[in-house]
Every structure is written in structure tokens, then in C-alpha cells.
Length: 336
Ligand code: 5GP
Ligand code: MN
Image (cartoon, rainbow, N blue to C red):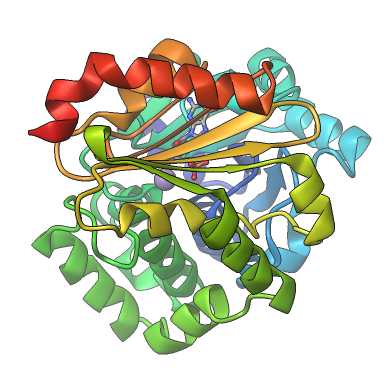
């Protein structure tokens, strides 16, 4: 185990550092990883961000992105960096299974593991933990770590601020979710003062879709949406042929579930998609409804109360059927 003083001592000298985050990184995963990266390189550390898989184009503009290594594409180099690291920062995840095959390599590496995360029920693989489930984003915790634990607010430069803003913006659904507290808005104000150009970041993330993404969204809403009024639940289920037909890329499905949740009466929305090797579920809920309980119990998943995900090896039809069969168990919570 490391305490804060020992970690500070280590970070006082240049170290070999790997920063990693979860499979199919989202805005918070990339924003917190590159935010920390841009902080560490200012102090002469040899830092590398390694992602377990690729990530969408709308996240590949952040400062430092050109230095990111994707494990599935540069496996040998990634493995060597992980084995040789002094420190490994594990951001926006807390179970080694979330980084696929990289999990074994990270587990075996002699490096100190530092977990910075806001998901429930962390596994016990880390040496130092900055963990708070009330944080709206891991990027918020990176800010807190740099400013309040390492006392380096002067190192929150434009690059760090830009990445952390992106993480907070995306994970709070553009400052809408209940955990977007006044403290979050104060941090965001600091990030804008430090150089994050808020309107530009919104443009880059939300107004950079392809035409095929928009046509695919139209298809989902017109042909794949099923509303179950008796359960205040809406489902969008999409087969793999549709993904091919609409030339759907990594990230093109992001956010579609929110359209189902935008119907006034709906408390639970599910986006169920047939990927190459498995069926993936994305759940979103309003208020107190615990979306993460459903995926944890039935679909090998996890996440937060209002945003959770999981997967299954059954067929798309079976998963949709199973999901519907689960709803009576939650009827009381759904219709209150
Ligand atoms: P999304 O629906 O955007 O894929 O994921 C929403 C939230 O659920 C994210 O916080 C993500 O980390 C979590 N999540 C998604 N899929 C999984 C999964 O398979 N396992 C676990 N533990 N969490 C997941
Ligand atoms: Mn997050």
C-alpha cells in the first residue's frame, strides 16, 4: 500500500508511468486519462496512455491524443510498457476485467497501481485509491487529486483543463445529471478560467457526427423503439445487420439510449445492440431507479444508478425477451 506522502515522494522524481482506462473508452475515460497525462508530462514523467480498445473519433481531438497507444493495435509495445512501469494509473474503472486482456498484465506488473474512480464496489488490486462514488466523473476526481491532494493547481494548464472539462461534460450528460453539484460547476468554472474553451469542446464532441450516424439514429427511432407504458420503460433493440447497413462506427451508438429516456413518462430506457461477439445493453434511468442493479444481477454488468451497462452471450431476441421478463420485478419502482 502507498499513502499520500509516499505517492507524493514517488511523483517528486521522474517515473515511468502508464495510464489506462476501461474498454471502449468514453469521454470521461479519455478526458481523465489525457488530463492526468498532460499534468504528469509537465513534471518530466515518462507517461503513456494505453487504452484497451479503440475509441470514437469524436474523442480523438484532445491534447495528447496522438501519443495514445491502443492495446489491441500495439500489443507488444503496450505489454512492455506495463511490465516496465513504476506506476500504473487505473482511471474510470475499478475491476481488472474492465480492461480485457490488459487486466492480467496490469495485475502481474510490479508497478504501484493507483485507482482513481467513481464506480461502485471496487476490486482490491490497487496500492493507492482516490475513489468517490458521488463524483459526477472521474475527471472531477483527477482535478481533486491534482489540486487538493498534490497541491498543484498551477499545473492545471489549458491542455489539462480541456481534457478534464470534456470528461465532466460527457459523464454528467452536459451538466444535467443529479450529481452535477454546485461544487462541480465551480470546478468547471476553474477549468474555463484555465483555458478550456467550453463552447468549442461541445462542438467537437456533440456536433461532429457523420451523416450515417444521424440516419442510423432515425432508423432506431422509427423502427426499433418499443415503448412499454405499463412499465414506464422504453427499449431500442438493434441487430447487427442494421449496424452493417448503416455503416455504424465505434461511438455512433453513444447517446441513442437518451432519446428513449426523453419521453416524459419513461423511467427506464434500454439500448440493446447485437455486436460481433455479444449483445450489449446500455441502460439509463431517471431519479432513484437503480439501472445498475438490473445489469449487475442479470447481464454481468455494472455502472451507476442512472447509467449502467452489461452484456450477454444470448441472441438479441433472447436478451430483449429476458429484459422484458425482468420488468415485473421492478414494477413498483417503475410506476411510482
Ligand atoms: P454505457 O451504457 O455508456 O456503455 O455505460 C454506462 C455506464 O455503465 C458506464 O459508467 C460504464 O462504465 C458502465 N458499464 C457499461 N458496461 C459495463 C459492463 O459491462 N460492466 C460494468 N461493470 N460496467 C459497465
Ligand atoms: Mn466515468
